[in-house]
Image (cartoon, rainbow, N blue to C red; front, side, top):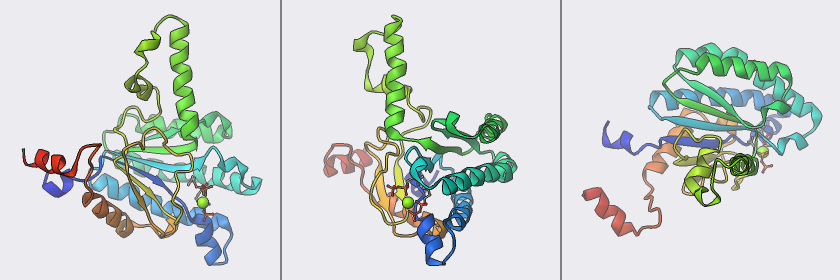
Length: 247
Ligand code: IPE
Ligand code: IPE
Ligand code: MG
């Protein structure tokens, strides 16, 4: 591994925002923006695979997105189903392991079945760990982890004092991958929108005005380059970090 690639993030998390505005600018229905966004997904997944990035988490549908017009929600479900159908073999061929995180029981059965099918197909792949957050909310994630721990306490398997940050992390979705090193949000908004609340504690944040359907390989590369120029201090001083590098 050369020095440039060793500085690459191990895990990138992205809020893919701006599809609606992309479509509006072109006088197209919002759906067209979501559809165009699937192309950006393909490009970013491929770029991560090629560069040996360990994990990529994409926010596809938040627990708050149910508040959108029924028609748009329905179309997003359909688009998700079609994308899984279309991309399953390519993902598998590229050794990508796909998992969907979020409360999936709220989805139409056909979509749930498809998700399960693609997860099973790619379960043993050893390349990029691709996580799609769908009907996901950071607060939901923390609450479901607390519930699991509370059940363990209730049946005597766990002492209250044994509840540590590590133990709670283990019950969260994404426990099997390192916490994101780089967070990207496209579309110009600078907020987390209930994405990975716990896991983003020390993540480098990168916001860009580029709308998601315009976010291709080059824009992704730019975000990676920006990341490599950051100094991550984790509470230490800049001098300490520099010193550690030379040791
Ligand atoms: C992100 O794009 C996709 C989803 C939330 C599903 P938006 O649909 O939020 O696009 P804007 O923010 O309205 O432009
Ligand atoms: C966040 O985008 C969710 C996804 C990209 C899936 P939104 O467009 O829903 O976020 P807000 O409502 O502007 O914060
Ligand atoms: Mg939006």
